[in-house]
Image 1 (cartoon, rainbow, N blue to C red):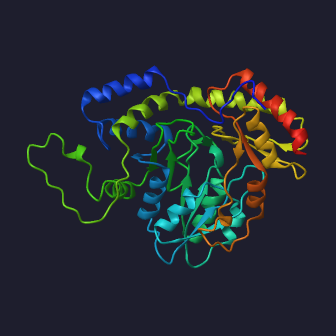
Image 2 (cartoon, one colour; image 1 turned 180 degrees about the vertical axis):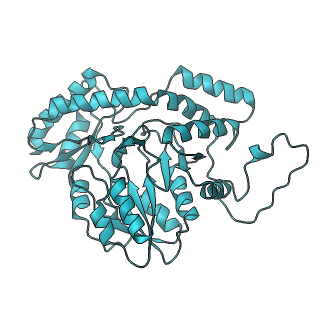
Image 3 (cartoon, helix red, strand yellow; image 1 turned 30 degrees about the vertical axis):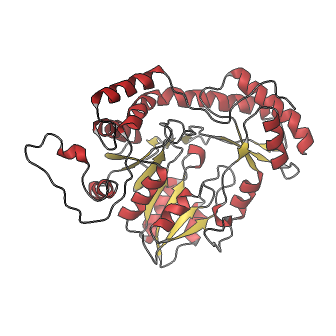
Amino acid sequence: MIPTRSVALGAPTLGEEEIDALREVFASGWVSGAGPTCVAFEKEFAVSAGTAHALATSNCGSALHLALQVLGAGPGDEVIVADYTFPATGHAVVWTGAKPVFADVRSDIGTIDPDAAAALVTERTVGIVAVDLVGQPADFDELRAVADRHGLWLVEDAACSAGASYKGRPAGSLADLAAFSFHGRKGITSGEGGALVGDDTTRMDLARKLHTYGIAPAVTREGSNQLAVPSFDMAGYNYRLSDVQAAIMRVQLKRLPDLVAARTRAAELYADLLGDIDELTLPVALADRTHPWQSYLVTAGDGVDRDALVMGLRERGVGSNFGTYASHLQPVYGSQEACPVSARLFRQQFALPMHANLTTDDVEYVAAQVRSVLGDAR
């Protein structure tokens, strides 16, 4: 079938303001990582996240790794991780030498079930990593109670959460540390990139040192009237964001309220157009939190062939894909946990186009194709 039009699954919103910001960075001569533009972006992003500190990183995976490192995760430890997530979350635990233990998720919003997390605590458990599925925050009050009861730390995987909030508090401020992504599919983007945020100065200072090979960034030595020769006393990483990317992110951060508003309008229109289809369960935005709609995940009913539905939509020019991963089923982890809710969502959820560039005509076209293809996928 030759589609009459094409609607992308995801798309960035980039324009002349970002290009102007790049020109300024090019003219400055400092385009490498952790420079003055990064410093400016970090200050602005910390305000947005409601935290005292922000550290711009190469991606969200590196931010998660830094978080777990400075919190002390290591060999012999167990870290409870939300199961329904891209495996970067579990990988970050593995990178420290600790073991990820996967907890099942809520059936309605796909975030970690606090009761499931509590049931997995052992004498080896050191922390919990909650994932804000496609940006909607997890149940952080309940998770904090579990963590405090057992003396655990709590990390927020806020990869998709820029612009989200929970009970009036911005995503990023809901745990001991939080990690964001600026990948091209996220609500704000520089193509790649991420950030680690938190309030604890000691932890964030250590993270900053680790993210630049184990020394302070070069920008801290600019303007010195002496020859400063750093000394390496630990083996860190190269987890820096370039100033080129930071320039884009400063503009994207200013756009954030408008981008979230545009995605919200698209989500509301999807709900109006598809809400009467019994075989589909549409995503929900809980009243006590702001959903930034990084993705729009729909759950197909038991009588619907999800894969056939996705492929049928693609044939009609509609970008579609599976939702995300049931991590405990991925062979890399050798997991023994049972997470039936996550496993069901992995089998049955699919993503429809969601980005701030969607027009009303786009959403109406997508909805019409869903109805058309659904008949063949039943």
